[in-house]
Image (cartoon, rainbow, N blue to C red; front, top):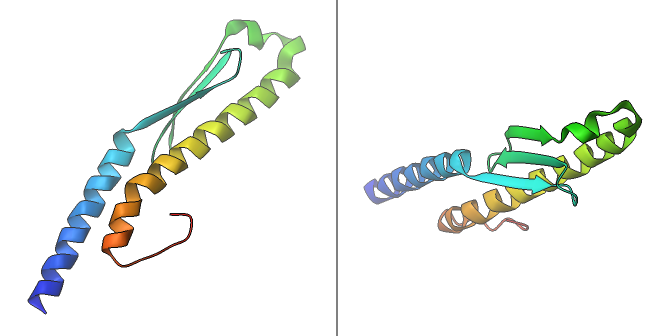
Amino acid sequence: MFDKAKEMYQLQKKAKEIQKQLKNTEVEAQSSNGQVIVVFTADQKMKSISINEEMLKSEKKRDLEEIIMKVISEALSRSQAVAAEKTKGLMGEMGLNIPGM
């Protein structure tokens, strides 16, 4: 029983370390023309968004909205992939086999 408690403590410690790594890992996505750049952390928090001034003209509003949606979606997907990869080992150690992880 003590071994199980010790094992759970170690897994908990690893989980906290992974959470810290995810918080400190940045993932960037940008539009094909580089006009919009979005940065997320691997724990899916948006860190920054940068928009080229040229895109801020009113006649480009619709294009800008579409680009922002695509870039945010890409950055979020990338951050989720990083999180899944980093947590994969821990899940295996816990005996969890979750499809897609």
